[in-house]
Image 1 (cartoon, rainbow, N blue to C red):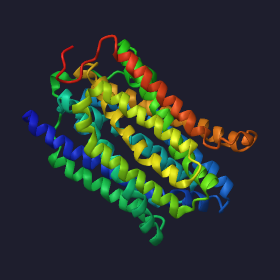
Image 2 (image 1 turned 90 degrees about the horizontal axis):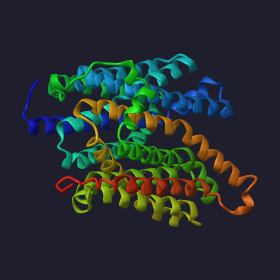
Image 3 (image 1 turned 90 degrees about the vertical axis):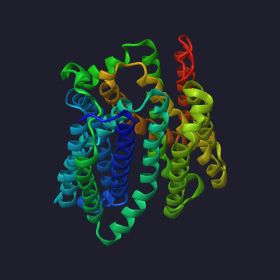
Image 4 (image 1 turned 135 degrees about the vertical axis):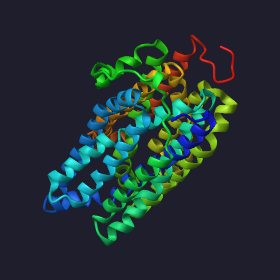
Length: 415
């Protein structure tokens, strides 16, 4: 299917935005009920449930690490459209499996499958690279970030309402949304990768280690990839430690945490949906990366040092401005590889996210435990956030230095 570039771009952004939004809504909806289902399956033992829930998270991240480059390579060979649609269909069927799960191990199997099918995020990124000119990619990646923000706000709230009716209902609702999206995509989603740009599938490139070799193919790409990994590593402190931290330091209850998460999601939506495009236009990609990461480090520092809850809240909008950096960083990297390698690139980047998700939560939770335990006398319960701030500063300095030798021009600037 061939379409004018402008029509293909409009169709891509609309469908990909809705696809990511539905995926995030679906994942968000099961957040309030999945831990309780796990606890019910282990006889109500909270400690055992926590251990098993940690296993669920590790299994999901491991599948992302392994299968993101596979899906990226498959999309480089067969095209983006079939990979996205099949993956979305698999996600919908997987939610049905989890809704019907009779025991813990079936539920774990469903979580493993969801880790595999959710790897379509990498193909969605490749689709955007196919149909969006370089000077508009940062804004397009920002829209995907906005979909994450909307899903992060609405998903858990909707899941909580449905879960109050039945703990299985959020899974059925998620399955319906995912499968309905597939039906829509069959009619409206055009293929973005022309046949002459497709390449043969190779397990050499599709396995995680092989996919990461692409990131070493260009010195600048390698440096930016390390920066991208550090950013996602630092991000791991937020889902793994925040609830424990605000409860320990400020005595916040579940309601206060829910309001905080809603504030984070709304702030992220505003930045990703409305500020990325003008920021990149004014500062260009390289400076936008530096600016966004500077705000990210400042936000982590506020979180880690805030003596009271209201001061902690000041860090929320500051941290949200971090969202300017990631779309700009992705745009810089997409310009360093051939159109035939965009799927592999997005798959490799998703593998880095999976790897960061595997090791980050352990590092930050153990740091938190250390500084409220044997090192409590140091008075640094916010140590995990300060560590994250250091990682983000390192990522910013690396990205700035990496792009300086060749002076990577933003779109419209002379090389």
